[in-house]
Amino acid sequence: MKDIDFNAIDDEVYAGENIIYGAGYNGQLLKKLLDDKKVPTEAFYDDDKSRWGEEYCNKKILSECELRRFDRGKTNIIISSMYVEQIAEKIRKLGFENVYTVLNLLLQKDTEDFKFYEYQNNREYLNSLDCLISISEDSRTKEYFEVIKKTVLEGKAVKEIIDLCCGEKQYFLECFKGKLNGLNFVDAGAYTGDTVRELLTEGIRPTGIYSFEANHENFIRLKNFSESIVEEIPVLCENYALWDTHTKLGMKFNNYNARIDLDSEEITVETTTIDEYFKNIKIGFIKMDIEGAERRALTGGMHTIKRDRPILAISIYHGLDDIVGIPKMLMNELDNYEFIVRHHSYTYSETVLYGIPKEL
Image 1: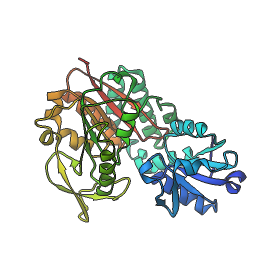
Image 2: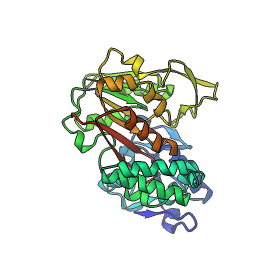
Image 3: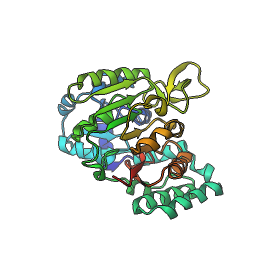
Image 4: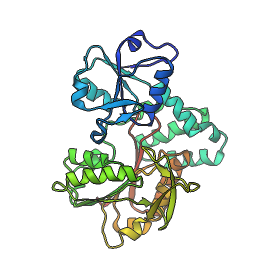
């Protein structure tokens, strides 16, 4: 693999057939940069099968069958995703020889999105990181918080974040094996069913899956997917956002990155709480990736979490405040849990705090 230098792009990128792997926000950003440099792009490819055949940024999202028709020796696959290691392995299995990444670009974007420099002189924040470093018994968890501290002190993304990427499946760690069958799963931020697809691939068979997706378009795709696997596993889909009260809230980016926006009035979504929805249902596993609403949703579910003591897989990467705020909140509220952090990408995204009840 080779990282593209946008100041001096290799001739073979200009001359070859270029396919962007990853039709999300980063793929859109990459397509624009390639267009600006007059680099031709043939198409996109994405692992989400429900999107195959769609148009994205005026280019087709190829199916795997269509991707295989391209010349393995002449086609350039440019990875826009932060899941570099996992995707590179898939590309190698497909036989493509020319693989490019844009890690420098993605790290630059992280600096702009996270604004690490705004926390450089925030002594309270740095003290919170020091506290998490000191109490973390797991070495990889300690390393993660140490890298975040270095990042904040430097005020920009650092390449050490790449070394933290673990090889374990996101949400389904090796230590969970044999413990997940027969549980009720809560999939908060279900998108179009990608976590459920992974769960099926792993051979996990919960009693039921309760999938919450706030974005209506994604919800329709999620529902269609769930109906296609109804004989394998029961999936109940809900077009709710999880929050700490039952209300209606605005949303922004009615797309891949749809999230709660308290100031928006154009697009609204109904909310519910974990405590309200699951007052008569026992839950055993909560996966939560809801674009920065995690703390509010956890607050609205704390009674149920204390009652049922589920395994937790909570995203903490949507903002610097979440990186320290969510661990501090759960460590203060929950007794006899082991908390570990695992980082699942080559950028600052996809960091998950796992909470494991010590009785398991």
